[in-house]
Length: 330
Image: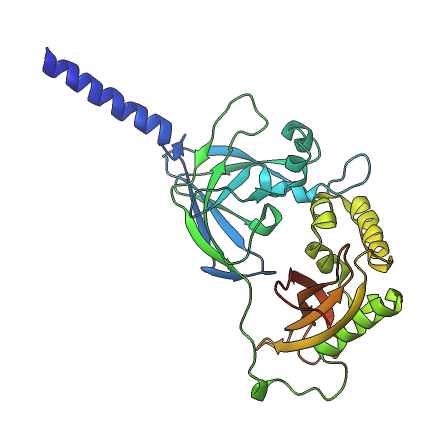
């Protein structure tokens, strides 16, 4: 009797394990893949999803896409597509989930309301057939630089129907999100026959702030990228629709052109490094700014980009700032 009781426990445990953690529902198996292990900031981290029919019968499931559909305000809903039928789960090596930036999730809107503006496609797979889907993880999660991430996927084959079901991917992938730090040595920097070098662009930018004339320097700034360096604006900008983005960009440019309490007193360029590709650069600056008690010294790292190596125009695309502690100001 005791032996029979133990066998029943083992059987029930195996059954619960199979039903709770199985990656297979109605003959569907899901696999994920990624192009490579290392990605640099600004690059698309593209996740490839493969759905396979491992049964002997035809199976069907639903896929929702935007296909240019707009809501009643004529605003595209395409940026919601990548977190409906296919929902990747991105987390670091310590198990912490990355921050979701999908607009409808950030705004706490109902998924059912999003599906109204999307096209429902019914996919039918014969035995052994596959369906592939690719999505950009950058559009779904805020990826931090110098961090290693793991990715798995939840697939909702019957989304929008009373029939429920979820399929967890049979595998997971790992990638590293890096800040690009490889620069040219001084001896192999590309020679400029004309145009301004990155450090000259930054000098122009900061001199404009000193002179209170930002208008002449804004043409050297990539506003859509530069705004991401300012948390007060970037979070709302990331989740905003087209109208919100235009409004936030105007507010950001007004902020740059406004006389600030921490106004610039003086600055000096301390370094310039150009990436081997010749299309991105880092310019380091030390700057003295006003503060409530006494002036503070800051260290800035400006990021600049250009379309290609022959393009004479560099644009400022981002900045990192830190206070230089222990510095005695003149």
